[in-house]
Image 1 (cartoon, rainbow, N blue to C red):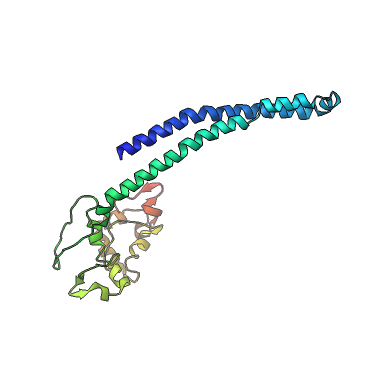
Image 2: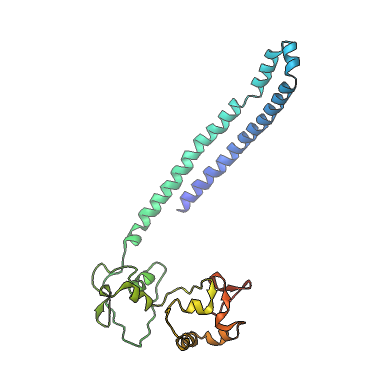
Length: 232
């Protein structure tokens, strides 16, 4: 891939080196053409009185954009296809070289987690950690085998109920009060359940120290008064 990047960089540099001066010439020709046009329109009666139309036509031909445009567009016509071809060739190479890894999936996993146990899942980027965890809330379904909770195949559990029972990997706050954000997990939760959840998350003390406590309003992603509430 480094070779592809170098080739693209070389082609882009060549395109700029050869193309920009030509487009600069086009711009200069355009300025001259505008000047000649203004001059002709402002003195058209004099030109017609002295029958100088031929001389004015020759002036227009001298500042014609045709040649300058042709040179600039010819440069683009040479470099642009090569740049596109090289970039697409690199994408194909990347797809071919990465297709084994993309095609690899989790297999031969046999794990049992007992109630109350805590496990850690480690591995390199792209090794399948998130995919493995997302099997539980059924963001993916196992192609072979089953995922069971208390011996029950999760495919037999209502998805809405299942996902409510699973905590999300990424913490996210929505616009609204702290209370409203906490109720996303369970809309019918009582005050004591709300406080208990905050205590477990070690956020109760911090929330109570806020201006309006649990009724403190948050912006999207937890911003309040331009300051992020990082501890939530």
